[in-house]
Each structure stands twice: as C-alpha cells, then as structure tokens.
Image: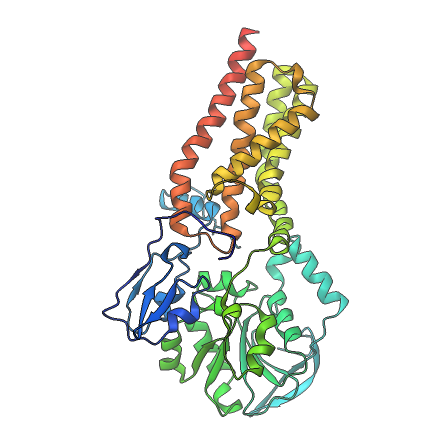
Amino acid sequence: MKGFRYLEGVATLELNRELCVGCGRCIEVCPHQVFQLEEKRALLADREACMECGACALNCPAAAINVDAGVGCASGLINEWLREKRIPGFTGSGCCG
Amino acid sequence: MNDKVPGFIRWYPAGQGQVPQLSTSLTAADRLGACKARWGINRMHYLVPAGLYAIGAPDAEAPVVVTANYKMSFDLVRKALAGRNVWLLVLETFGINVWCAAGKGTFGTDELVRRVAATALSGVVSHRRLILPILGAPGVSAHQVKRRSGFDVAYAAIRADDLPEYLDNGGRTTASMRELSFNWYERLVLVPVELVLVLKPSLPVALILYLAAWLAAGPGAAATVVAGYAGAVFTGVAAAPVLLPLLPSRSFAVKGGAAGLVYTFLFRLAAGGEGWSLPVTLAAFLAFPAVTSFYTLNFTGCTTYTSKSGVKKEMRLGLPVLGGAILAALLLVTVGRMLS
C-alpha cells in the first residue's frame, strides 16, 4: 500500500502454483495487490504486503492458497489468549464489537 | 421491514412482493447518527433491517448491490447510487461494517446464500449476478455462493463511491478501485471512538495512580501523575495514529514508544519537571512511553495494512519490554521515595 509497509518476514501466506487454475480471483479480492498473473497462473508478486485477511484463500476454487487469517489487533489477541488460558469470568469478544 | 426504515419513500414491487424504495439523499438525522456512531454513541445499535431494497426504479435486469446492515454502510451505498436503478441487498451483520463483519464471518457465504433465498431474489431479477464490496471477500467464498445459490459473485470495488464508475464501465474494476488507502482523514475519523473505548479501562488505573501518588507525595504530585498518564494514553490513542507516517520504524510499538518519549519530554517541560528527582524523571521516561507504545500497538486493529502475524510478533517482543519498563518505573519511584 502506498506510503505504508508493515513488518517484513512475518506473513504466513503460501501459494501452490501447481494447483492454480489461473482464474484470477485472488487478484480480484486482494486489497494489497499481492498477486499477479504470469503465464496463466497466479504469482506472489508482493508477499510482504499481505495483511492476512484470508480473502484469497477463501475465494480460491482450487484451494491453492493457504494463510493463517485473522485480525491483527492487540486487544483482540490478548482477549484470545486470556480466553485460551480460561481466566475466570472472561468472555470478551475482542475488538470491533 | 416496515415503512420506518431510513430513507423510505414508498413500497416498490419486487417479484411477488414489495420492498422499500429508498431515497439517495441523506437527511440531517442520518448525518447526526453517523457522527454519534463515530463517537461511540449508539454505535452497536446503529443498524437497518436486513433484506432487499430498491434504489430508483430497478427492473428484472437491474444490478444487485450487496452491503452490510451497519447504517453507516447502508447510507454510504445508497448515497453513492443516486440516480441509478439498482437493487440493494442488505445482509444481517448485526450492525457491523462490511470489513469487520467479513472478518467475523457474519458478512459471509452462509448469510449471503440465506438472504438471497429469504428475499426470493431469483424471482426478482432475471440475471444471476451479485455485486459485492471487495472488503467483503474475507467472509465470502464466491465459488461456494455460486454452487449453493446459483448466483455469480463480482467483487466490484473497495469504496462505495466507485460504484457508479464500476456500473458505467460495464462492471469492470480499475486498479485504483482495488487499492486500499489510509490517509490523514481516514485515520482521524477512527480516533473518537477509540478515545471513548479507552476511557473505561483507563479510569480505574487513573484512580489507583491518583490515590497511590497522593499517599506517597501529596495532592500536587497525584494530579501531575494522573495528568501525565492521561496524556500518555491520549498520545497513544489519538496523536500517534494520526501522525503514523511521520513516526519512525514499521513497528507500531516502536512508533508509539517514540511518540511517548517526545510526549514525556514536552510534559516534563509543561509540568515543571526540572524539580523532579532523578528516579522520578527516569520513571516518567520509562512508564509514559510504555503506556503510549501499548495503545499505539493496539491501533493495529484499526489499520488497513497490519497482519495478525506481525502484531503477534510485536506483542511477543514488545509486551515484556513494556511490562518491564512499567515495573522498573514503579521500583524507581518506590526506592527513590524510601531513600529520600
């Protein structure tokens, strides 16, 4: 995204080009222009720009994309950890209401 | 669904039934409601009924645009579609905007398929095409929707404002319609609700700080400590997010820490900090930037470009440092107090 880049080397996005059918859905849904089509198959043109929203994987009809999708929100992650640790009385749903 | 829905003009025939025909101009009440929601007032109940609506005089060939039932989303879309003949299919996202609802899955495949059936859409339109916002894609699987409902999904644009151009050029998405942004205004409008949300957890902390500082050093010191803490929170929640591109590093924790150091420097000048003891000065420069850093890190949840893995990494590395800084500050103040 113009003017903004987040940490390098953390994205969990993976593309299996062998499975790709070249439909271009990933290019359509990615808000960060991570994918490109090359020789009728998708290519990770800018993997580091991935924000792990999961749209590409969910919309890939060939299941060629894998990503550990979720919302990167510190409060949400803390709440998730607290829930996992079963802190009594904690049932918060995290961020964004 | 009744004639009390926002923007209702009249009932309009749709297949075997009828749906509300909507106005595309927003009233003062619509604008006030949006402004209140930005400040967290009635935000979780700011919604419209899910279902099918008519904009203009759509016929069986008219496009179907899909959105969420957060009233701000609904208003943005109907306003953008002024002068068009379009069906508006509103999904039940419980008053959450498209992107957050897609992340939660409520703006999702199941709800879309359910809503298409519930509104008998296949009897209203002769084509089989749904126009979705691109930011709805994290919740919707286009090929599953096709398989389960017979409708094709087209992801049109990120912003509702691009819908007219999209419709005019025959349903083609241009590169700019697909590109996210996060400009000054887009960051600024997020700040009010964040400030309101932070009040609840901050007030008890401020109270404890006030009492502790009062007992240790009297009312003057207590007021200074609480003012310093409030300013540190404000810097992290409001100032750092707005100044985001000006702050150093890609890490939000580091950005917040840097903003916090500048803030503490300014606060010390304003609060007559020349008279502070060395331990108190050190404690201020440890604790306030730590508070600012935490709240700036928390803003990752509102940005348009941070990833879960990145935030996890920042938290794994950053939280022990921030906790250590707060602990060290408390020790410094306590030990300094005992020695003086």
